[in-house]
Length: 44
Image (tube, rainbow, N blue to C red):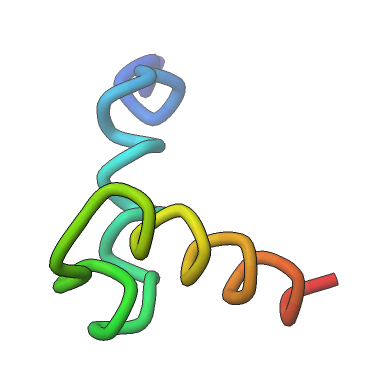
């Protein structure tokens, strides 16, 4: 059993590491949210 693959923290870290650098390095929460919306919109 490799149950650790289903842990929330592992899934979140994997997705966080896939985010573009300009999203992660946003100077404020508002800018982060706007950039995150844009980045996620590009995935769909």
